[in-house]
Every structure is written in C-alpha cells, then in structure tokens.
Picture 1 (cartoon, rainbow, N blue to C red):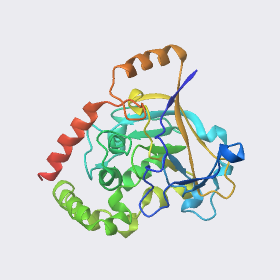
Picture 2 (picture 1 turned 120 degrees about the vertical axis):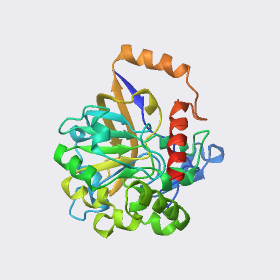
Picture 3 (picture 1 turned 90 degrees about the vertical axis):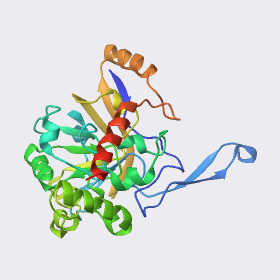
Length: 294
C-alpha cells in the first residue's frame, strides 16, 4: 500500500482563511551556540490543509481529539467538478453523482480545480482561491446528511460558497460580480439565493450532525480524480481543538502507485514538486468567461 499526498505545502507564504492568523516562524535557539535548532510557531488552525472540527461552529460537539481513526480513514470518492463549475458557480449533488459513485457513510473529496490558484501554483491567485471558488447550496447539504457522509473535503478556501460567508461583506467588488452571475444564471440576486437562513450552511447545518470537512486540499490530487478509493485525514490528537492542520492522503496499491508516479513524471509541477493538469485551468477559464459574459 502506498500513499498519494493530497496536502498543500505549509509555510509563511501559505494564506490563512481571511482574517485568521497566518503562520509565523522564529528560531529561539540555533546550532551555534545552543547545539540544536529550535523554532517557535504561531498560527491559527485554519491554515493550509486543515480539518474543521465540530466545535468550530457547534459548542457541544466533539473536539479534534475525539475523532476516531475509523472515522478519519475510510472508503470514499474523489470527484472532479472542474469541468462544470467556474467562478462563483453552485455545485449540486447531481453533478457529483453523475461523475462518481458515492455510498452511504463515505468520505467525499471535491476537486473544484481551484487548488490550481493556490499559493504554490504557477497560476496562483489568492483572491480567486479564497473568494471566487464554487460552492454548494442547501440541496447539497441535505444530500450529504441523507448519505451520512463521514466528512467532506475541498481543494479551495472553504467548503461553503465564499459568497455564503462573511467574505461577501469584506469583498464588495467580487460580491457585485457574483450577484450578476446569480441573477443571470440562477434567477435570484445573491442575497436572496444565499439568505440568512442558509448562512454558512456547510458548517452550521452539518456540524451538529457530525459531518465535518477538510479545506485547502491539493498536493497530487489531480492523479486520483473521479474514482473510489480509501482516504484519510491525520490531524493532531488535539484536546479542545476546534480544528487542526493535518495531512490528507489517498491509499493506492503498490502497482497502481508505480503507474501514477510514471504519469506524474510527464505532468507539469508546482514549485514544491506536486503535479497538476493544466487542462483544468483551461476549462475553468472557459467556464468563468461564460459566467462573466452573462
């Protein structure tokens, strides 16, 4: 058994979710004269690839330390929605089930393609990564509950649509763009489509039911799209932790791993050596141009 890393690199340049503390690193001892290097880190939990725990939004919920390994590692599916959703789009359960089989109790990883705009990629665009990525409506959240999903993961800034978060108020220029898309494509202004009753529904609706999510996936995710496999997330065993930075992986057998690594050799790489498929970017650009022309 081999592992495919679905984790983005973590460094001082990694953007935290807007207004959260970024990573700060300083040496408090050095080889000369202390005989060892030691570092002190300051950061929030919502930075890099991380798992939102129940108590992030649900006070009586579980902390990160209470999540069993059988919950964190399980069969699941990775779905690619980059062929159907561009900037500000809304994805649905139908889009997911048209592309991959999702079983009751699964882990579901959603590849929007917006990891291509992450800080480590040649097409890096922090505003697009955090503010313009697609997201779901309540239909999707209700479907996730009906499927009894273990946890969900996304390759962008949030499991919620960014315009269904406080970002809508912080980024009025982008909210104006999104409103135009929503009026033309979905028949409602943004503030009616995502009214107060739906606010951050992927957090507020699902966390009380134990359906949490990981955000900011990436790594070699482009190698494992639209398929079923075993998935795992490994946070700290964090007592009282509302969320946790961690590693997300996909498990494949040895023979397939060799095939995937050969495929990776022929793909373009990020500055940290993760592979990516540039066709996803081309498709996202086409979809977004169509949205902006509405």
